[in-house]
Image (cartoon, rainbow, N blue to C red; front, side):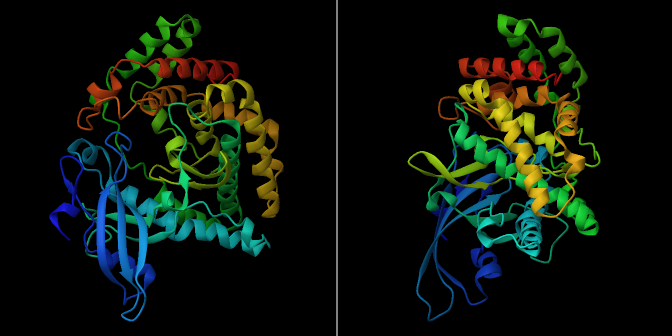
Amino acid sequence: MSASDKVNNGDSLIVLREPEQLLRQVLGDELTVLDLQQTALVPMGENYGSSILKIDVVVKRKPDAAEEKLGLVAKMAPATAFQQEMLNVKASMLKEIYIFKDLIPLYQEMQREVGVAEKDVIDVLPKYYGSRLSLDLSNREEADLDAVLLMENLKCRGYETMDRKTGMDYAHAKMAISKLAEYHALGLALRIKKPEVFAKARELIDIIPFETNTEVFAGMGEQIYQTICSDPRTAIHKDLIKKQLDDNVNFECFYNMDAVEPWLTLSHGDFWVNNIMFKNDNGKPIDIKLIDFQIAYACSPMKDLPYFLTGSLSIETIDHHFEDLLDVYHETLLDTLGTLKCDSAPFAREKFDKQLRYDASNQLYRCMMALKFFTMDAAENSIDLNDLKGTVILSKSSDTYVERLCRMVDKFVEKAWL
């Protein structure tokens, strides 16, 4: 590998080394790599928790086999000192590796056991091509800069994300929330039908792999409050919002993951536009894939809903289809549980609405903070990942942020989520 193949993504040199070691996990021990090119897949500021590399590789599975070209993505440790300080790379890597290698196959097995047709079995992940915590594959104790999750590059198959500043239209949002409901229902079914397996899954998933640096995020609540007070549409709710900010001064909203029965399942944790990829036909979604499970957690499924519904929808979708999407979610949840031969009575709509109000009640601050990141334009703003406070958190609020913030606050008030 030449020096030009390496990717310097900030403070540390992040480069995929010894790719054969990874690819042989899936493609066989005789595989050889003939050529490999790697570049940063996304620009600085488009991903805050890892380094994402685009890998184009030419391989032969056996000495006499034909050459194959593979388009891959390597998800690796974050590059900057600040990111590395905040993120527990070992915890986040082990969690995602488990979801790719074990959890989704478990869900697929449960569906096949009850006779779900193969075309309807959940298939939401990019194809897995290998993983490790370090170059020493026997190491399960420490993660270093060679830690990697290797997967297919979905863009090579025509998948793409929506515009995160604009948000999703109804058709895409409907497909996304339906798939989220199916994913949540499978977690509920795993807990109900295979409690020992669910308990084992929690050992890896019930770890929050980051620390919210209070010094870095100091001042964000005050800036949000000033934005709220400066717009008459949101200023009328300033007292309710001030209480939310005061109640979450130490970012309790990030850590409040109550294991509430009977709703306990495995969440996605970061279900927003950039982590949802669609294949489209003439602008209409025909398939969906989900990525980035670093902050998945065992908790109520409704923890994912306010975050998605108020942070990832277009204004038109929020204004005209918010209730429709809640209906779609709940109907899909019950349908999936029924297919899996689980009693759906504990998850009736009245109980769902009550639990959603409870779960959403302290999430506004988290959603407002996230929206600032969602609406930042990495191309137009000079985002310094070692100075998130100056370049993102305390940066001037864009018109897009203010407009979508108004809709977010309106929905929290309207739904009695405050």
